[in-house]
Length: 110
Length: 114
Image (cartoon, rainbow over all chains, first blue to last red; front, side, top):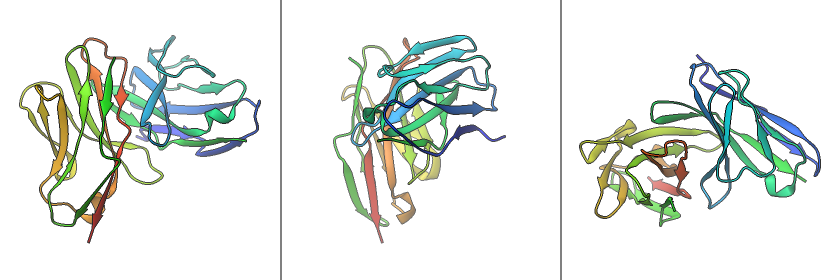
């Protein structure tokens, strides 16, 4: 039981490049979500999903796309990276009222 | 609007002394309240939560938190701090009626000195 697995752990992108942050969970949780963590701002919700085939926007969705084709996977896509997207990204998976977080992806856009 | 405030960016305490990390919240419905801890280069780890019932909630590693509805607060406490408690602590809230949104405070760095 690995919990929530995020890849990669570190990534540097050039402005305008695209990439996908991967998130997988093996706990059969329906609810999954993506957050970004910025200094002095806590975690902000980007997108979330309440089950396969269902996604919705959080607080800061602009510049990000998600899909949920399976219960296990919830990838986050940056279509055209911008320096403002430099951040640490966390994926979370939930059962009941508590969330389990991955170890994060540190993304730098130059 | 829903929000969480952690008024202290940093809390310093000596090992063995009691510690308190403050959190106040604002939600339009009934709150579910949480504390998470983050160690360097790691994800968030769940400490405790308040859903309903007893206002004093006990969690992992000897931490506890008290829900105070009139003051809209959910302060994290520990009777005797350890150096290993040094980390970044986040308070979070979600509404029982709008469960999909999870709002986090900005975090408080706890420094426990030997």
